[in-house]
Length: 157
Image (spheres, rainbow, N blue to C red):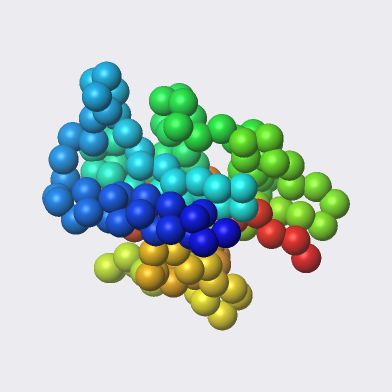
């Protein structure tokens, strides 16, 4: 267990070091783009990069997830409903019975917008020293904003 924690901390330190280096091209050695997705059995975490996809005022977290999926960096399935996109599985881990994929983010407010996008009152997830709040919107309605961190976390009731 200590080795796993040490490995996770080393991986996070490496990702954090590159995240604070500015807005680079985020390219892989093969010339493709990298979304810096960090995953384990229970959670998938990514920080939005300014050039991974073109970000606009209407870009949602679902749009970013679709780009990660198209690039082979994220595997998920779900379905659309009148309420938006419902995440049914991530890397084959299904949300069934009393389990679900919760969304957490450190995006709380956007300047000039009255909406509250997350709150720790409904739950929180800690990653890399950051406390992410439970998203108040689903991935198809949650804005995708450069520099903010989003987490998909497998949870049960």
